Length: 97
Image 1 (cartoon, rainbow, N blue to C red):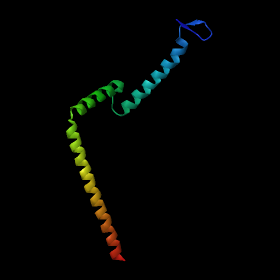
Image 2: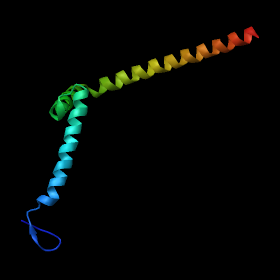
Image 3: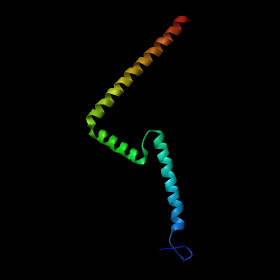
Image 4: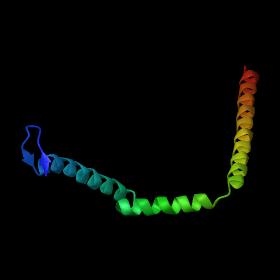
């Protein structure tokens, strides 16, 4: 049993029902957005999270660091190529003038 601000006893439904309705509307909206992405509701999203966490937790940190370093090396290599191409473009325009 709840007490209202004016001291009268109330069962609290007046305060709880709008909040429950808002929660249900949020959950329905979330279910709809997830289903658009092919995930079967909140349960499917939680299952996907657990599976991804399990897979990522199984990866050794050293492997992740090594792959990251490899990607950064390729990035630097591509940036060097881009700078070389820009320089060639500049030389080509100078030679035309």
